[in-house]
Image (cartoon, rainbow over all chains, first blue to last red; front, side):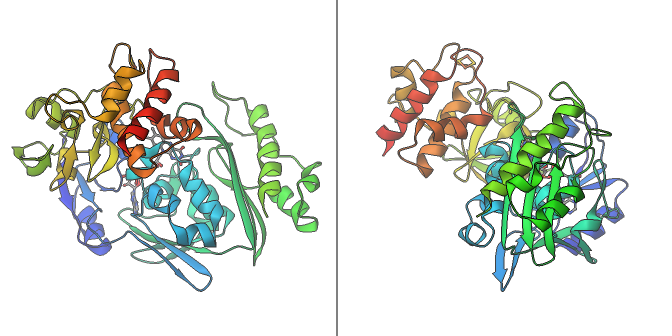
Length: 263
Length: 154
Ligand SMILES: Cc1cc2nc3c(=O)[nH]c(=O)nc-3n(C[C@H](O)[C@H](O)[C@H](O)COP(=O)(O)OP(=O)(O)OC[C@H]3O[C@@H](n4cnc5c(N)ncnc54)[C@H](O)[C@@H]3O)c2cc1C
Ligand code: FES
Ligand code: FES
């Protein structure tokens, strides 16, 4: 790993200021993606600004909104009674990320800022129409994920929390890569105040909404309603784990299972 | 160079490290505690698992500076003198290791699981050990060891 300056931030604004003041600074959350990348010398930040003391972790529920601080670990979300009772699909999603040691360090803010094509949280953020709150503004889930490893965040902008509206019902099912547990395909289905939403991760370079499936489920919210809707294999990911056609097929299978699991 | 201080296996230690020094290197090279292993460079194998403030973490995916002020337990901190920890004893009794390379990480993960769940089922053990890879045993005896060790700990 190339060397860098290590700094700690006392707040989100302090972190943003320290990143802006540095040459090519980066925020450090759980380090579960950033540090392996740096070990491979695929990233060479001049500074790492550690968010662990910036006061950004914790879960609160107010009315119909579950707010999760950016530095909240996957393990904390997986074991939160508040999350389990308000949005059980979200707790279950968190409990299936990677392995216990990854869940003890990895954070929701780091996961969505990174926007890995196979990550789990982006499916929940898009599937529940969550709002991403930063040190500067609020960003709608629909506008946040802009491309592979790319988001609407500006340089040095710090996610402080994610606000999830409690849905009527929701479920997330993934077909995990057996080695890493990342999603080969994962589908998040939710019935929200704003309508039915179906978000797909793992299948394409960036998480997306399956609009044909949303329409079918709006007419009839049942697994059977998806019998005749499909996702095109055009532009889907293909690698040693799965071809584009296989991924397209898996989207249908995971979506049906997710709908069936909605109570 | 940044200075760090932490408690490792009950002993307070101080050191000067580069910012990029991984916690596992601080533990192995500076503290000479070589029971914690490095089996990969992709954060996937779990040979480096230690406890930080009681939680299982991969010490190859943490900087030494991030552990400043932490309470750390490594595999060396489990036994009580010559008396093995019940989880270590269970691995010995159940043939839970062959070459032993993955064993420190397996045992540290297993102890963390047993602290949360004193009677884990086979399925729960397999789910919890997803981040610990073994090239020798085929896992069967490891799972048996963890179930027995958790029982012995409770
Ligand atoms: C073995 C292994 C298996 C994994 N399996 C899965 C899996 O099954 N599913 C899955 O979804 N993920 C998986 N992951 C990834 C894991 O969930 C990471 O925790 C996550 O992607 C990154 O979160 P982090 O807190 O570790 O962020 P870091 O690695 O610290 O940071 C990642 C990026 O986000 C930026 N960032 C961090 N926090 C903020 C913030 N608050 N505001 C703005 N930018 C920020 C950083 O600058 C960096 O660019 C796995 C990782 C490993 C090592
Ligand atoms: S050395 Fe392989 S996960 Fe740490
Ligand atoms: S006993 Fe050899 S790697 Fe597990």
